[in-house]
Length: 398
Image 1 (cartoon, rainbow, N blue to C red):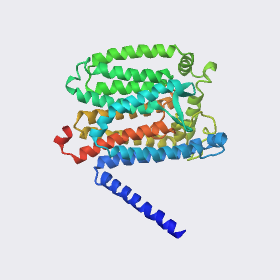
Image 2: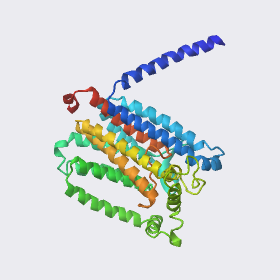
Image 3: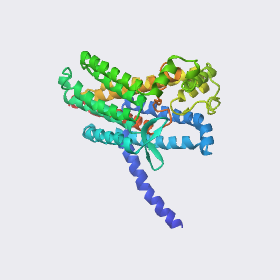
């Protein structure tokens, strides 16, 4: 028996030594921008795990007889996501560029497969079930579209003012992705993708006249899509007319989320002491986790979370400004637009500024696909910063 243990320990040593060498060679002596972004990301993930545990424990106990069921799965997703982020951050930019077409085709294929083998959750068919786990391809589609936009504009950066050469082709590809998402009825994800497309192209320097025309067409199509669904119209009508008898069922999440925020006051009721998480708010660990943050940690805690996101965005902006290649700048810009749009929409929904759209809070809400995709996108930005730090300016431009 001791001999067997000794053999196993000797097998582990080369593996651990190899891992240590890989970590040292890839992550030692990086820039302050790299460590700041990685540190903020890790902190938000850990904070998210704490809030997922607090907000989901009651519903998990009722549904699965295990208060840690949702938390355990989210912790597994966090480990996978962090490992994926570190792996992606170690890749050279040349390899990442070659991977863009594969990522785009793969995510489009998965999103198309949702229409045939997908499962429905709360009226949206946007998930695939694999070995007991659900995969949401639209979250990875966001990353693939950002990579595609960056690569396409970089290949035609001198023609950015020619709508036929840059804007129209990008929006055609984006429209295909939007259409596939809308087929599943996921208006929230479609809204975020549309914002990524429009804002990224406008900041990149695309003609505003062309973008305005596309915006008008997109708004008209969105109106048609919204009015064609009785449930969506009922949700919007209830949001516009709160307090009416007909709006009670549709405004349940928003109203109880507001009560949670009001109950938290300035300093909160204390971590784990939320009352609204006792099955009063559906999907409380997902789309409405910010309500529990406000209730348990108060206005101060909610403000700290918003400040952490502001610091995260500031770190991304710093890396974007340090980048000199068009591909790097546009890719980081796309990630910035994504995180700002999604976090703003999530918080606005909880505050009642927008109707319920079903958009998670990045890095904090429960959900494996959202967490892993977001960490993968941040891994791409870290890879860009490693390139910024290790190569001279002229080499970075090339």
